[in-house]
Image (cartoon, rainbow, N blue to C red):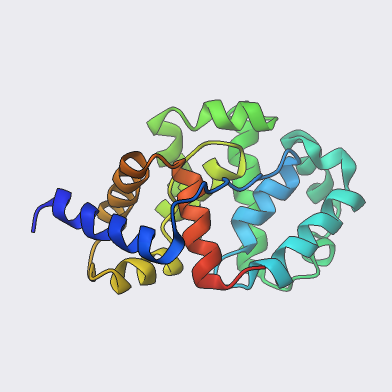
Length: 202
């Protein structure tokens, strides 16, 4: 079966299950502390009930962390695990490492990060952070307004239900991108629609 055939099968499943859209992309964040913590803490957790409320609380409690430098200053003296009410040393360490990497690269705002991710070497640098894989890199892009497909377990399962098991991350990302282009959807909007359906997000 060719790549085009696989994309047609996935497109048919999208239309049959989700309809014709339109699918709105996720809003993301303008608060860089929230961006970094979202990327660092969300994996394998219920987003709407566990992660999102904590990020909203973080924004309210740390308004000065709207920039990377502001967030870096906060976590230099404050306990991020306590601020997020989330005991996970590994995820806290990931947040610190992402913060330091971005700050060293001159990234301070949402617009800075969106532009920084245009460069492949920066995406590769993010992958050197423990806990950051290809999905997290693409996910960070969507958090700052890029239109990307971050393939998580829900998108894998949706593709399997379409009859497309055993594909790699890169293969599935390319297929979802092709389906979005074919059906006239925003890439992040299609991804978010699949995620909401499979995660039963409200």
